[in-house]
Length: 262
Image (cartoon, rainbow, N blue to C red; front, side, top):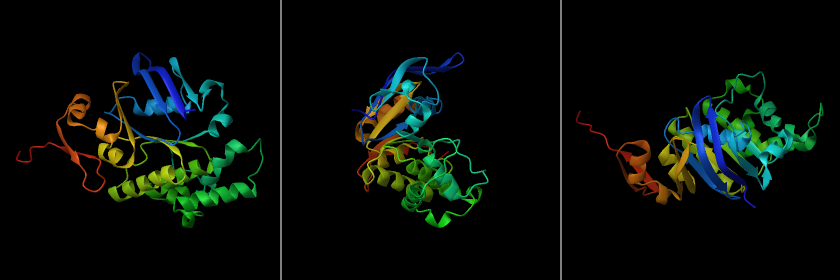
């Protein structure tokens, strides 16, 4: 049984079709990066997979169950989303925010139990923010805040993680640190991960499968060395690049072709 199956997805904002006939199968324990030009539909596709918006046509199934038949709590026990909209301007501590991941397992006004607090503690340890537990979420740096939201998703204890531009607005050191964490969650914790990103080189270095969207359609899908090619980048992004092999990761590496003499 696959983690996610999306078939014939169609979605539009008013008259503009953003997703046009997307088929996507995500196997259990896969690590996938979704890349593509601005406006290609990447974040919208993630929202469709997460059940935040419903397709006008097509369907999404999670572990063989149509997503439209799942209640919000049932869905939240199967899948966690870390979105770009995550805000740190709340009067909560890091521990409070992480503990919110247990909400799908509580009923009504039920208080968190000892086991819930233990899961939150382990999630903060996994993401290296245990020492920040009592700090207000609004006082964290961008990288620390992203780790806190990923910790909340871990505390949610789902087999599937969806990440929308997890490294946006981070410097290169925090980007690499966060992606190493995401890679570890995949390899050591066996999470199925689908992440939207705009950085082709980071996607190629840290993910085992790349899906390229263009104009709301899947333009390429496969291993990094199959997908990240000069011809594909030229066709999808409309720019000429040099693609060679990263000597450290042995994955494809994209270099922009710029005229520095001008």
